[in-house]
Length: 586
Image 1 (cartoon, rainbow, N blue to C red):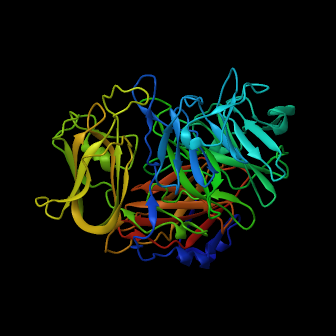
Image 2 (cartoon, rainbow, N blue to C red):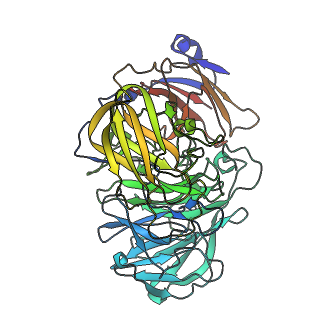
Image 3 (tube, helix red, strand yellow):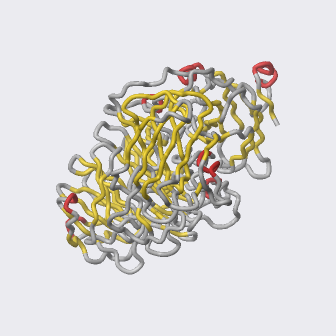
């Protein structure tokens, strides 16, 4: 065990295999003024769309395994079991298109634009059919090829710069990810035999070990292939270890040609979010926006009512100067800016709005005993409060403890005692949001009394900040069942001091299992949580793990062959502390 602090600098510099680095560029991570410009647009994960109720029991919502493609100046989003698909002009507001002309009830749909035509393919164990349209806005599609040479599950198209077309697929706890070239000119016929590309290797890759915290000793599922090309290199992405786990993530191999041979990239998993409100960042797709920025749309897990109870999450993604692919999930379910130009990193996207609602008291007129009001502010999408009924007199009032500047609010509805299956017309949430400084005199903030949407994770960026202590949501109508919330989340900024920075922590890499490491640190005064950043190079701390209150963490997702660098920053309602101390463990 090694205890790190500034006083032991000289001693620790001499220890074999352990280095101390004071990185000057980390000064750029020091606290910046909160962004108050109302000319930009933000979003907040989970993605704010109408998640469809599943067709089978129990009644629950789902969307997963997403593909986003840019086609004719719009973004199109396809996801499993959704009864249709969505389009957006800006990645923030999504409009649903219902269609029964493609198999939108199948898993892991993929799409690709070739010329003026958009092609669609979903998973199948019997017959894989490719569909096409020149105008996806209409919901009208036709068959491009009735049946591929063999059925595929979790498919993904990729077209190279030379216009050659490839298909990748795979979803198994035994079999690999496959790839094959398609003859686009000859009705998408296979060119040669499918090639085995990558297999799971959980003995060396901790992120492939099943479990919320990568602790279950059984074969992982690897699935959800996706390929991008950047700088002449091919990036084959895949998901594991299972969609029901908080550890659900996407890793990446690289190659010099589309069908390999592929080599494991050192930075893995490249999309990973095991902590925070909505955990999981696996089985997704990586795409480029109109400004040249990359994004990764992925799957977050709830998996309480059913293993396949899931949501969608969107994260900024980057290729660094050495071509390292990495997705930034730091504060990944806090508001982020939708950029209107090419950006360089997280600092260009984060408006500085902090979570004000964590652990705060919530008053309600009724609650089911096993589903208390405190579940609304525990930052866990898997827990929720439920009122005893779905009547209009139900409400929830959150006390922030003191007045704060509030910039945005996210309401996360939960389904309790619902009896809805599939997409149905007329489903809607209607409610109002009010604010107060004395819990007696209330002002209207958001009036959704005429809302016709059943979006279950609505996010509101306020047109201008308000200063308040109390916020109240009043129910008017729910689609069915009880009035229930998994998160009453408030974002803004306090005017107090930042928590003390973490300049001392312990690291213990398990000598019997190098996939695992334990970190421990002392509580920072006034901190509500900590963001642990780490990576395989001292200037590339591309992984993030957020915890609330805890002052220790076991990470079991490491590569046995890699050293790792760690840094910890504390945060509260007033902002994020500096990070300066970086430790490497060989």
